Amino acid sequence: MDVHGDASCQSILQIQSDYYKELQRRSTGLSWATKLSNFMWEMIHTLWMERNEQLHKTERIHELHGKQQLLQAIRLEHEIGRGTLPVHMHGYFNVTLERLLRRSIQDQIDWFYAVRRCREMTGGPQLIIDEFTTNIPLRKWVGLPT
Image (cartoon, rainbow, N blue to C red; front, side, top):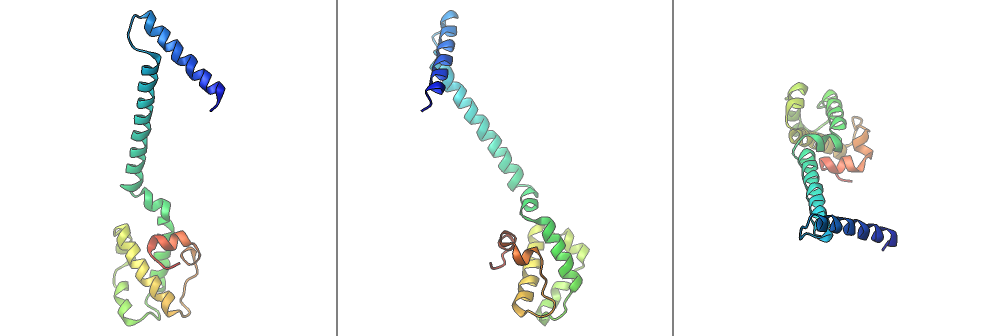
């Protein structure tokens, strides 16, 4: 324990206790410090909860994970189109790019995962090398194997 920090705390507690005595109150410096500490922890908790709310209940979490990279990769995959993908994948390209980009982020991830995973499994000349090829956190975010 830091002796100087401890002395400072003791000094503050004593000053607060002396102040309460001057006011003829029964409170102590320790009770004041306890209330202050509780107040600070409540404030920290409130800020943490607000941070979590903003991060997990808005689009912010997706922006941090790589939403822009996902949209870029979807555009590229859609531009390449069906190509040499198996016939069962052709239905994924019946939706226009504009409509796909208006869907929920989860729908976009699902579409991208299916198309990219199939391209990776079948190989061929249309295999795209981009951030989702080399960036492990991005691959995990959309469910691609690492």
